[in-house]
Each structure stands twice: as C-alpha cells, then as structure tokens.
Image (cartoon, rainbow, N blue to C red; front, side, top):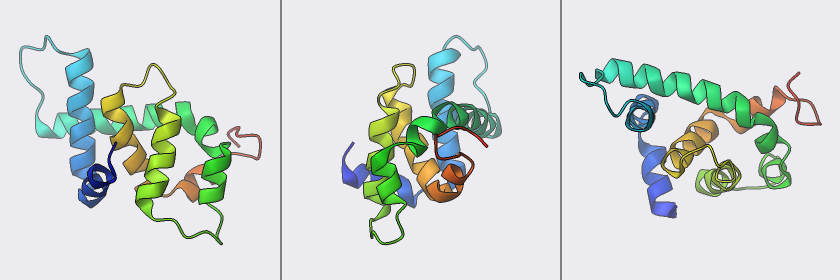
Length: 127
C-alpha cells in the first residue's frame, strides 16, 4: 500500500470509508445478489463488518510493540506511518482480504488507537 493511497483514504469521510468497506463485503459474500444494496445498506454493512473485525484483531494490534511505540506520547508520527503499522498487522490475518486491510486500518487510526487500545489490559486482553 503506497503512502499516497493511504493519504487519499485519510482524506475521505468516514461514511465514504464505510461505503467502500460495505462494497468489499458485498463483493466477497453476496456476489449473486439480484438486487444490489442501497448506499445506506452498504454503509451499514461496512459498519457492522468494521465492528466485528475490530474486536477480532484488537489484541494483535494493541499488544504489538510497534503500535505501542506509535502511541508513545514522545514520538511524533504522522497518520500515514501509523496506518502502515496497523496494516502490516492486519495483513497477517489470512481471513482478512487485502482489499479491506487499508480501509480498516484508516478507520482504526482515524477513530484513535489510543482509545481503542485503552479498552485492553497490558496483556492485550479486553478489560
């Protein structure tokens, strides 16, 4: 994933990102639908998928040393670097399609990794 692509995704609205994610979900799971889902339905599918995946990958992301360093208050990293770090972790999940990794990474970073990871304890388990 090129930094320019990440920067472009970071500029998109959250609604657009969820819409893109919904399109990815539909293309993988519902390729045989007779009636294509509406924009609203795609956004809702994207949100549901995001929330499901977010919980599944939380410990892997929040217990990762690179992510912990990214969250260190003394380090100055831009969002592109942080998205790349998150994407590298998500790419290890073989059940997660590559086309969705960048979108999920951008949403996680934009929503705040610090708050996301505060919902886990030091062992990477949910508290």
